[in-house]
Length: 403
Image (cartoon, rainbow, N blue to C red; front, side):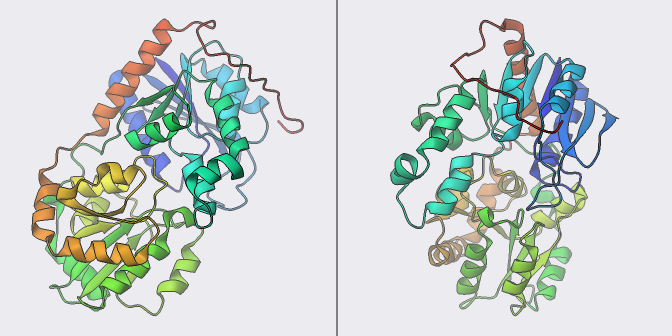
């Protein structure tokens, strides 16, 4: 089967989407499929890889995060889709990439993989502090919901990796969702990777003894990840116990985070670890994961931490909450550093039992996820005709200017 992914948030410098795309290429190669990833980039290029190809389309640099570029015109992307000759097209964002997929005239099924749920991430992220959710939906961004409904109606399925994302869309009367849980790299993440010497080394960086607790936070340094909540919570909990925090991540808010923690020797930031084996060893060597974002659509870092035997301190909504069972987690009120500190203290009071529960939890692998994805895509391709694709009155036109 030939699959094309119009992948708006690919970056060679990393991130969750890149991790997912590369894992899918490996799975496609093993299963005999071919995945063409069409991504905005600094210049046009085609790179062959086992399991598919990367088709880079020249596009402007992202104005906020220079690691990324943004799709602009239509013809280059549509030409790349024509050249790829896919049996199915996937959009991996609900933004410009999805419109380019919806407007492409090819007679094949198309899906959206929900790497991002924009209302939770942006509308609620901006306005939660002032308005109730119903008010935001009905008074602040009703136009955005109408836009999304018209767009999503052009797709056969919206693939959600977490039940909470599908439920959120269902409450908005979007009913073509399909939940296919994600997973972690088979054989990479395990409690067996724990390295006590590495753990002690990290605590020494924080001027703490080996008897202290090592927390880890993982993710991009951007506003929606709510890092100030984590920093506030750890500082509060650290007043009564020896507690260190290692933050792994990069992004445009790195300088702001550095200013925030520069006077706190017990909090250390370092860039992401590219080597997956070294990364897995670092994760397993911590004592618990702390997380603050409620805008996750799966929570890959949390799933990898759980597979490594780490319990969670997590917000009470979003996809991380789907993973945060009471046996191995403590939840807190989203956005509250005070309540997050309480959750940290509650987890540490039962840390050995929580770690044992996390280590015993069944681990779903990415291989199982891709088996399910490919099976669904093959079924769509086999049954699809142009007449069967939803047609809900959305008139799409090519934007003016540019290629």
